[in-house]
Length: 591
Image (cartoon, rainbow, N blue to C red; front, side, top):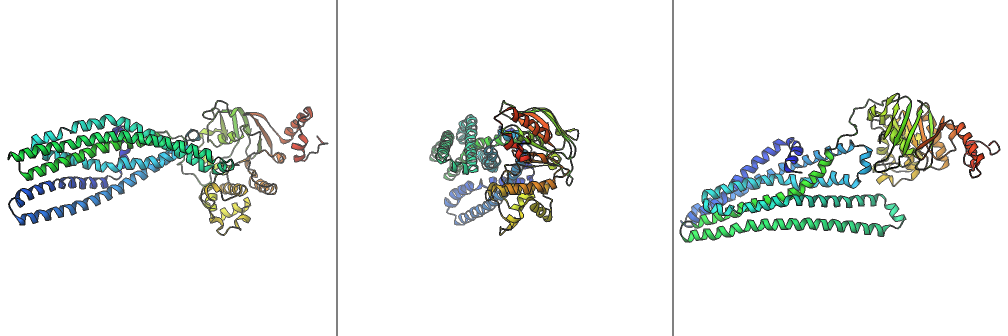
């Protein structure tokens, strides 16, 4: 990213706090002007007070210096406060906009983007951008103003010596310019490896129980050590290249002082320059190269910071894929038939389609059960119904309207999903349930808890609803997490229920209780249940069978069972009586 593109992208963030920055820059200009006075006061002390044995003048000049130092310190403190006040708000606004941009991406984006990459850009890169670019902006301007002001004074005092002193600026700036691109590239490589390590650590601690169960500590340790060593090597390469740049700049800034001191001393010896003027001129030369050296050093740091700006810009420039900012009417309704029309879908990065040419229709209020082996495509159906992903071909309709024409917030507000993999936040039980409907009252939450069968469990907790569930709900059992997810969706009261193995973590008695309660809640509501449990097939209107992404059948439970009976009769390897018939009230004799 160039400075121009950086300014174009990020200037609007600064513009919001232009008053604070204007005052800060005015203070900067005042400080830069006043900071030119001390060498001139010192020259006056040497040439007039000391040489003229004037103690009164010496006292006055000393008082002036003390007052000047105190005033400059006050200005510096106020300027730094304004800069930090505005800068922190700039970064906060940038982080907020970046989060909104990430929330506007679809699941395809999250499928191919690492979590560590997201966290790195949202937190690490914004912080580094502030530290290496935005926090140096004011200092950069200060150095520039001082360099120009001191250069003008040097030319006024002795233009010949000034030209000699300033001649070293050209190689210094050339060094900075020629090395900036590689510095930025090395910084980008370091950021990428840093994010890779962060991503690995995030995955490690997310799956720490698996690491423990499979005794994988040695493996993850070695992998972490390797990634960390690679990161260190990248950082050292960055430091080495930066060191060479800073070393060359230091040489070019030190030589002028030596040359000027020699030439000024010769002038004093020959009587063409006073001792006070020599001291003042020498101080100005050392001070002019301080800001110039600082300018070059800050340019190096900014090159590194622009790498973070580039990474942030990659996300900010993404087009919005999902609109979630719509104000929803209270409890919108989305009723009507759900139809799949020749739908196919392939996950990003895969060749084999998860679904191929699937077509079926679910009438409003109908209860459907979806069965199939693991990996058959059952969960993919749910992903497409909720528009977490878009079909690769074909389309889906609700109430005769294509799904991609439905307002996404209304669609997802009207469809409730209870998954076998329950997602919980590190919050209280109430906070996790309220996520289903933030506008719900305490009475609504308690009613959902009773219906989900959570009430007895809550009675054992000293803090009740205010009990924290821990990261990902790890303090709860599988069954408790499942009940909490049910309560969350009961609070939502959707128009279409999608239950993906809703009782997979419950014992048989609890599963029966939950199913009986769900029958009452979902009466007259379109309900789609994904399950491996065939014991309740007769409670549904139709059975959708999926195998390897293809729809095998969509029929009534009786027709499905009859077909399975025929298959059992034709094959000695199918124990249909134990697997299906007995669970559904048929005896082996009847079959």
